[in-house]
Length: 219
Image (cartoon, rainbow, N blue to C red; front, side):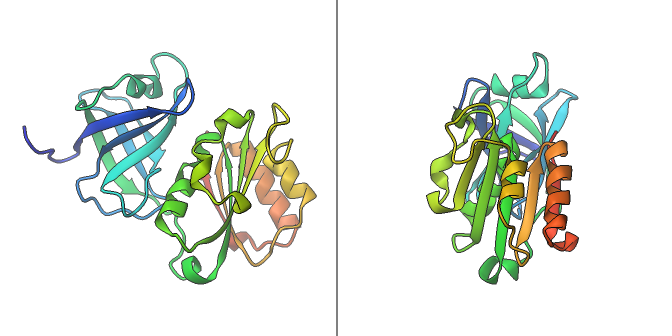
């Protein structure tokens, strides 16, 4: 077969960021895509599949997803062992965790993530060079600041809860409690469900309209 058909795509390569976290690149085949959307990805011929936010930019001619491998036998471990040319099953892209077009040139967004929940925000920043953004990324260790060099250093705050190596040495929710939130900005929350619920409440308490808070639960 010389060309992928239907929902079958080929792996390009895997780029390892940490011993457990990696970026998987595969065919896009000219599929339409809006930054913030996700795909449902699995190994071709197997039943298990999972949703992953697209990590690559709108202008890229490939798709990338950011994955953290967890327990043995999980789809995240199986995808980690693939080789270039292996086949994937793909559904999508789909979803509504996207920035409204009028916000991109004129508005301000605050992007709040834990762990690999930063994936859709990486796509936002790659896709919209003029975006007025600030990122709060919550991880345990600084080594988990995935592709930090892709972001404006003045707009990126790394919150490390497991060591004193980040820009802020507590959780992202602690950062929100200790810093004044801009009520005119749109807030995007992605990652741990506990963080999302707590951050949502903090933002509301600080006067942010709930209609300006957008959420995507990862785990």
